[in-house]
Image 1 (tube, rainbow over the protein chains, first blue to last red):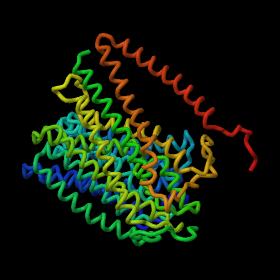
Image 2: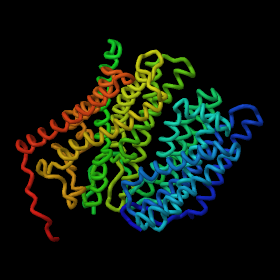
Image 3: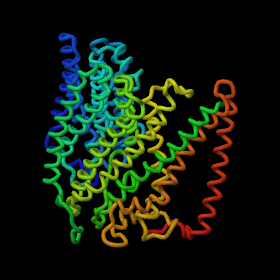
Image 4: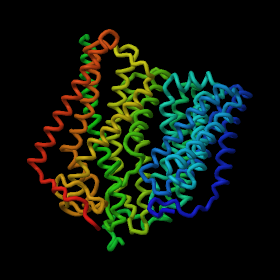
Length: 267
Length: 302
């Protein structure tokens, strides 16, 4: 592993993170849909946002793994690529699948990611051992983030409602860009030789909460004041995890100083 | 071409100029983009520093985020709650500035913490003084970009762009980030961060991270960098973005795209050729006047 970018030893296993990410993401999306349908309200849309946070954690761990092979400036590109794959597959899944749409979208996106990884490794010969698997995870994360944020705005899993509320209004702009930043920012912001997995992942929860907050604002127009639940939950999650992040910064850094001169003899 | 369209065009050009300048200065206070790589490397090659280290995602995606967020908030307030456009855009821009502040703080903390083995500290006073300056610049950028997008899409104005308002804002955000990154960095990286090296020398890979960490008096901070860049780098970026927005819309305002589309295309090509010639003349003049570029002596064996 390249030490320059970080991405060293992982305390939490990637398979576990994938299980939590995929399971949490799908569960959040469906719970939001079902509870909203049963109760006839949009109060439960925030659950899709919580699913998005789970997927963001999974995605940023994949970014962390693949970027530890020394593609420092490639971090933003990888995050945006995840969303690109996710967007195409998510829309395809939703358009043909009805209520099963999210599952189809996520599966197609993961397959998409695997094939892209295969092509880059075998044909362009990048020879990054984890690329296929990491891009598969990223594709899945991208699809969950897009569908989850889409469900937050529209309240239900319905292709036509999502098209009307997310695409036609232009809110896809914020869904796309904040979704990709949530996935790519945690590792990008913690990049360096002393990067640690727990700090990056705690940060990814708070970045996911920011995505949920921003999309919660958009949902104020489509589902009305019920969108405030999403904003409130996101704010609470963000505050809790930002504090945790700051604690980990204090734990890991050479020193958190109020002010001061440069330390003598940096090396 | 009517007078209202020409007036709107002038307003968009002016707003774009302000937005370009503030975008570049925002990235200079935070050492975003290309300068950031050097700030990041500095600690690793032995120069611990008190310069802001803001790695968000490169300027284009991060500015796309601020513009999109401001536009979405404004759009919700206008169409959902009937707010006046001016206030809605102002509130949206506040939201963008807050997000910018949060992303900047986490990037500064995270990147400096990951340099622990090189004794790079996290300075809270740097955070306090710089983040507010970054947010203020981001507010101006978001306000101007979103106003441009609003002018292009508002139903009661003549331009009527077919894309929805937040999407247009995101695209302009990407554009301003790209222009700020390509135009602004040149003036920052070459002239301020590497004052040890002669003008026009370029940066040898071996000198990466060898940035100037001490100012004229005391330690260098990024506020000090923005003070320097506000004189040339910022305004020139503003001019670049202003000209992009103005000239691009100018040719389709003069020539109606529906009936005189080819004239608009030809005008565009002529403008590009004129700029290529002008840039070449400018480069030759600058080399002669401020050189020297060291002569290329072939690859030297290590």
